Length: 363
Image 1 (cartoon, one colour):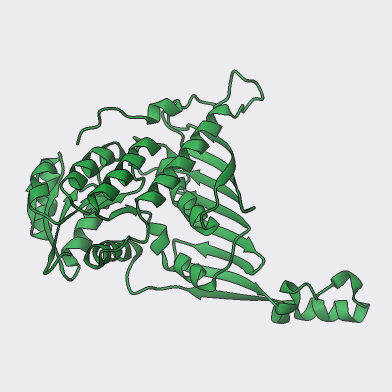
Image 2 (cartoon, one colour):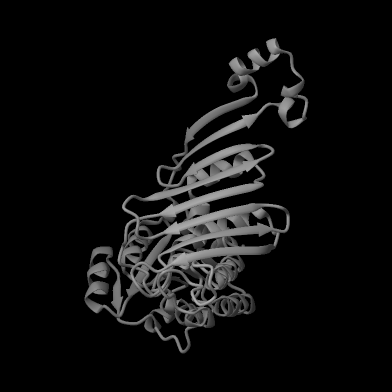
């Protein structure tokens, strides 16, 4: 167990890495020892701003720290995290955990053998709106998720499934409470060339849960919403403004005692006038938390190290999300947009799933 200030190193100081550096440098009980990035000037600028050391590679940091945070491009996650785990260091890896499920499985196994925490940055688990949903304990039977935004110019080594949809895949798996995915249908298209930029998927779970997921990284306006239906109620989460709207059914509805077709005309009229006061009661809440979601997940990482426990989103959760993402990509390749087998991948060619298997990654 770490004592005193926990010494942490950071690999990768791009757009998101800079945010990690800011938070880590301000967390109580944490010392940001250094940042590493092959863009040396960028690393030096962040190090100067955060009063720590700069390195061109993550290797020198491994002997100076007690834990590592990996925010490199996805293609380097496996190599950098492997080096850190082999040093016996707890590791936080931004989503997705790795480029492939095989790489993810290797990291999960290595963390288990080394006996250290491996956490994955599925940040929406820490979004106050999702935490409010979990407190209401609505068991979902149908989920629709929409996640889109303008072209950012980042994460071009992966497609929109591993870039954006992976967030909602993880949430669906969390809602499914261990149920397996038994069927996947998907379609996608490349807009800018290379990997898919828009994707639509349907997941059917073994417990009956059905989820429709939509993701696009070329949309003018940002959308981060999830709608959940269940016998216990309905909820709409807006991850951007951290709010939840919900409708809670009355006991008469959940018990099946409300039978509109059998009511008199007078009772029907009363139901029309009072249904949203008595039986389908709406509510809305803004869910400000004590911290933003990125800070919360880094606090959980530090707590997992100090308390010698598993983090809220461990390596296995990250691995499962990638396994489902790969099934979506495989289903996408089989979908015939024109109805003809010669054009299964949309109006523009997408890279084969084998292209997602990167060999010989090096930091």
